[in-house]
Length: 304
Image (tube, rainbow, N blue to C red; front, top):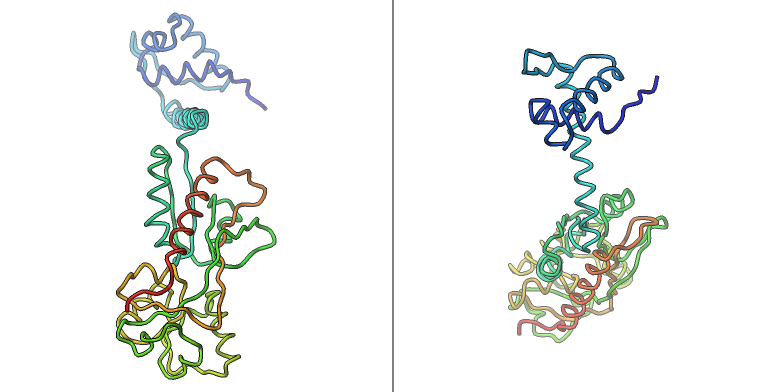
């Protein structure tokens, strides 16, 4: 059987629970005390059990009232949150932006993108997580993230837009023998230990293909994440081929040279399916594009 509970009855019940008395509840709701008594009486009749014990001028909530109040309070908290979100939307501020990124793009986002976005939108909560490429795609697909930042790659079920492109670079310690060259060919790598990105990295797939075509088998390679590849090369443990954004995070502590053959990398944003773009996502994307323009326009020769 469907109960015919009136919102005003629920409001009166909540007011009594908060204030502890019918008279105080009447003041909260700007009505008379008899009106509160009537609303509570009708509410009890509808739900089929008593909510309060009367002891003279005092009222004591029964166990059933306490249980019911927990649910009522959750409802009101939800309604208040809806009101706050609506105010934020009306004022074009507030809200939450959830972004998932591959680890190698964490540096540019933490250094340039998120700080600038936070300055422009001080009332917006930014949730920024780093994940594997597959994980970013999966979490964007279920709308856990409003935006995903990935390397080249796409999924048919998700809108994906390339926002920047770059060419892989060679990274090594400044005193490495190859650092004296203006550019590094793949044949140069045959003489030295290589530090390679993980096998599931899109860049690793390009490197492996180039090595096969050149007939080169890496000598006792080290495998690591992109960020760790750069750190290991910095310590003189070998030479690596990397995303220029990752390399730029180490500044002059590493030598960075163009790599031949050219291995093109693309950076893309991925969005949830059939999701309209908000002003927040558009602003984040605009800041991201500008950050890429600044970082990728810096050139590839560093150290030496």
